[in-house]
Amino acid sequence: MPVKNRFAELLPEITAWRRDFHEHPELLFDVHRTAAKVADLLRQFGCDEVVEGIGRTGVVGVIKGKTNTVGRVVGLRADMDALPIIEQTGVPYASKTPGKMHACGHDGHTAMLLGAAKYLAETRNFDGTTIVIFQPAEEGGGGGREMVADGMMDRWGIQEVYGMHNMPGIPVGHFAIRKGALMAAADQFEITVTGKGGHAAKPHDCVDTTVVAAHIVVALQTIASRNVDPLKQVVVSVCTVETDSTAHNVIPQVVKMKGTVRTMDHKVQDFVETRIAEIVSGTALALGATATVNYARGYPVTINADENTDYAVEVARQVSGQVDPDTAPLMGAEDFSFMLNERPGAYIFVGNGDTAMVHHPAYNFDDNVIPFGASWYAGMVESRMPAA
Ligand SMILES: [Zn+2]
Ligand SMILES: [Zn+2]
Image (tube, rainbow, N blue to C red; front, side, top):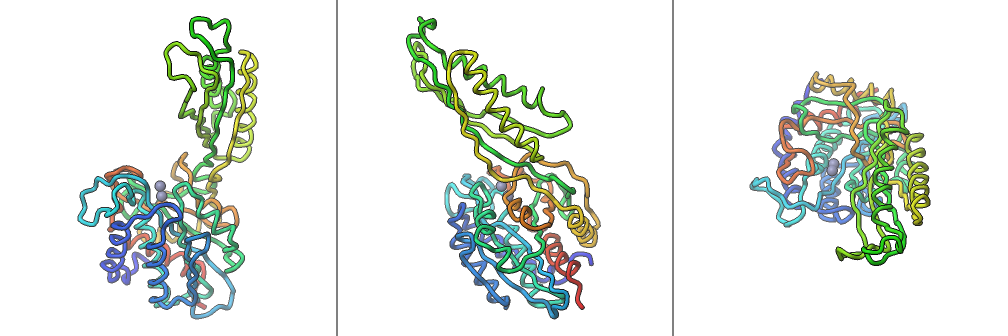
């Protein structure tokens, strides 16, 4: 099974959908136009069931195979949302909404999964049920979490799930994946340091929150450098520092700092959360201030199940023959993790060639990826649920 011939025929149509989505980017859960078009097309393809409004604005389509003797149900997922970026691609189908842009290629993911759905609804050459999942709000809103919380997995009896993301820097048609942790858990924290503000010429009468905050920023670096096993991945970044003084001669009363933590392992994640609290309160105590930490868990680590990764690699091999089964993990985070936490499955990268990186204003999804991505989605169904 190389690239399916049908996708060569469907390429102009799928490309037209992709470019239409690109022209009309929508953010987070506000993907009403995109979701409506997805649902319309799924109905035109003859899906057995199409349900809108799952996880607020997500869409689910059901495609039954010719037979259903084993009772297997496979979920395929794409994301629909864009980013708040001013587009600089200069393409004729560039965003018509200034300040919104499909800069992560979710336009391509949605179009490729629609292509696979059209093919699967036409051929139905499998034994079981395919669930196509189109989620909103991947870019920070937790749309995947919302769809899971809405009961999607149980409602359709989904047994395993597969997702895909394009990746600049990997040649078009090549795939990359790994078993275990592929992408990081992304948490965020907010630290508030309270001291005693006052005249900058009389520091002995104050508790200088700026100095306390500076010590905390430096001490937090020891989590990665001194506390966590060097063979484990961890990032602790303090990204904003804000004080309530705007003057050059006033020591602030309060300093607030915000940052992010990236980890690949639940134990390291728990440890870092505890250690941040210890370092912050201990450093503040040592210097006579008080401090609090507000720590919020975000997207969990993306974990590819071993067996399902093998299936994904096998299909990628059949599609293009080019697959790296042991790609390096990334410290970015992915909302598909919420689905992978519920069911075994795998998440794979498909090359987007030598383009700007995702989230860059000059990034664009390469339409030449479509036959590879659509073939992989459809191939996962035909190989996991071979026709009886
Ligand atoms: Zn993104
Ligand atoms: Zn993305």
